[in-house]
Length: 148
Image (cartoon, rainbow, N blue to C red; front, side):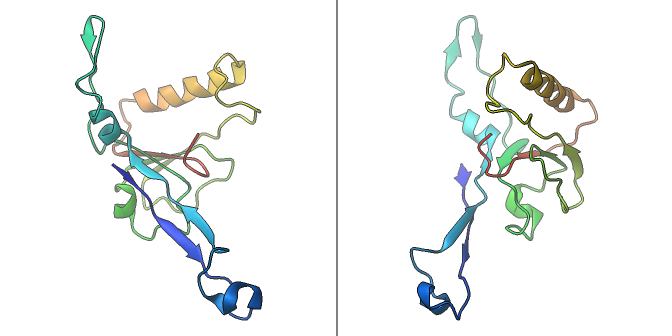
């Protein structure tokens, strides 16, 4: 299930352009873009690939979102993560007591180019974190907008 949290910036009450702080179509919106990867994959559990069935990830173990600072005051809104993996260049200030892993995406034009040695190194590091026997679940991975 894809959950979305939207925060509206009501602007300055003295700003006449924006109706004195009342909501209108000029309001800035930020979205948490939160989703449970296991819940998403559970819809594919009946698919079969040659020689082996798809084994989906358990619900509630791997979560994905945008940067949540300033949007979330309670860890329950983001699945109570025990580990937070940050793909942004900016470090997190508050991870609700979870173990924090700072793993910024490579500063390249195309972070999806898996032929790039820089991206390959980053993917290897991410897979090492995810495969660690000491990794605590649930794991929340986030970047700025939750799309990378």
